[in-house]
Image (cartoon, rainbow, N blue to C red):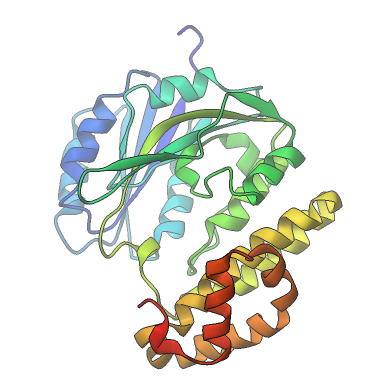
Length: 316
């Protein structure tokens, strides 16, 4: 490929010693050559830092290693962005894998100089089975349509699926909110809104490896931020694209209903009573939207169980 733009791969690392060798092989197998790897160790207490340092020392011109005190994935990504020099950036995780042509195909699929390319995801389960999600035919849309597709569940929220112009992030002051979970929701909305156009490649180029104990699969007091993020997301989206009101309401209803269910189950209610109390308030306030957009027979039964406080019948 001629006139290759430089792509910075920003990888936050935290206690990933077990998975890094596999990730390094995936990185090294990429067919796209004009890359810059920025590995940010977020205060790991295992051997991750030593592995990263050794890997980066092999090619110091294309591989950079940054160490910092622990601050979470968002903080590490922001530090990596500050250190990056590429024309485009990709935020990959340290315990996943990628198609060998992932970068090459995403660069080739860019719709415009200030556009964003989004790939589909292959979700790999612990037993080795997998399923492809967010697949579609290649198409290019304007920012409002892109946000509409995302709110409708057709696009991954994860930053790892998006090739973004670095200058777009700088010019619009787009960074990851630190110290919270679910931070990539607002980041995704801001990126899609700021782009000139968005290309959905539809091909699963990023392999998300589901692992026990990941942040995505755990429940703790921080999940209450989902409720606040939904309010902020609604304000942000409707200010720019008021025609997406229904799409935004549906997205927020599904997100909040998921947290409400989790907060009502098993030990979560006992362990995090404040989250449960907040969830019940949100359920009352969002009853209309939840009834409208979470209306499957299963959801109807679950709402009855939550209302009747029959928590023992909820799946733990």
